[in-house]
Image (cartoon, rainbow, N blue to C red; front, side, top):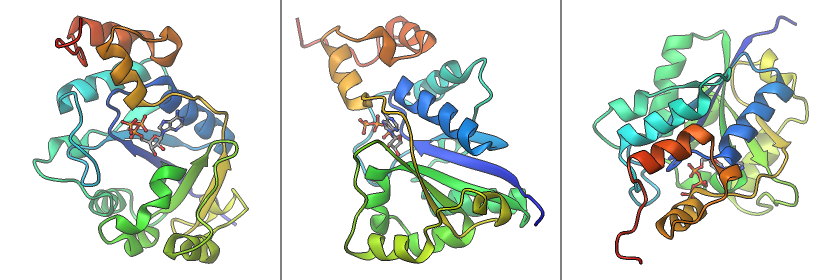
Length: 218
Ligand code: ATP
């Protein structure tokens, strides 16, 4: 069977982007031999509170984090002046890439478990595959609409991602990088951080622009 070019999109608020994101993305690209993996920062995420740093800062930080790697950034959602729905972004990507490219949307188990709250979530698999990055020990839903979706579309064969353009759910367990942007933001507000959690260029940028600093705290 002919192999398709594989493009994967890793969406997030990246507020800020951290080494959990970058290392997982690099590992995923390498294991699945993806042709392209793009980090796509959301403009106004419909499902969560507004992020702490501006769109411009979040984009600059993603660019710094990916410098010198073979990962790329897709800034289309930040260029739009209204909430971004993933399904609309995927429609645009599908128009650009055409029918004969494999397109995947990458997400963590936390995001996958809430997929049924996404706008037009039933259409996602007509446009793309879903790659779920699980951390060791993380459990996927076993009941409800997401469990049903998984039962219907899950494949154990990574090859499906290059043989079909869309329509499969593939779960992959990656090395655990126990860090979250929430922890980083609250650490930075107290002037505490672990150098290993952030790419050096991102940490430098945060300090230079005094992002996430909580001036109320001593
Ligand atoms: P926050 O703490 O603000 O919710 P976050 O660190 O979870 O942020 P997001 O930008 O919301 O980052 O995450 C984008 C995607 O990255 C999500 O699908 C999430 O599951 C995944 N992700 C977040 N942290 C990690 C990590 N340490 N390792 C792997 N994936 C991660």
